[in-house]
Image (cartoon, rainbow, N blue to C red; front, side, top):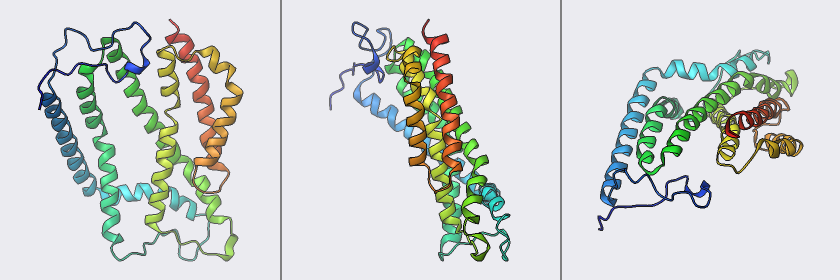
Length: 268
């Protein structure tokens, strides 16, 4: 295996304009292929250890976490007037054990996310220019914050859509929600809101490297609003009208905020 130093453009090289430098700073230490693989193995080991410890911690508080996750559904069940009360069920013989492990594993990813992001940053940083390093920090931080805000927003608006779906058939039918199916629906909705809330990060990144301008985004406003509404209707699970509405409104506001940020910050 060759141990010659690896030199090449950083991960953001495709965004550079012609004539800009194509590699990391010359004063940075060059790593060989073996050293790169060693660093990658170290990053993976640290991430797995962090995830394992976070999963064990989450499993210790598994009942409290499941109760928090059930809250939107229990609020919706309070409007159904079910003779069984606001209770959820599970139907599989091993779901009483598999559900806590699944919840703890996912909660472990969330708890270990700061460590995972930091390890990824330490691995990628040597391949970036100083200018790129200054950009990556704020963009990574804002990505994490916006994902958390989107997930929290979905959590607090979810009872409205669930109430509509649970009461649509009226009082003749009894709704007995399955916990495993609900948690799958819950996780999908959280991911959808969290990922789509990254819209300003993508737009500002394109604005920072000169691909987009605030003037272009203003010109595309009507088309962007139409696309946002259409995408919200397509990607949100369920058939209630409230969830896509609650998704499209903040996305439109985030689009407008991106225009303002690009005009005030990155144009200079």
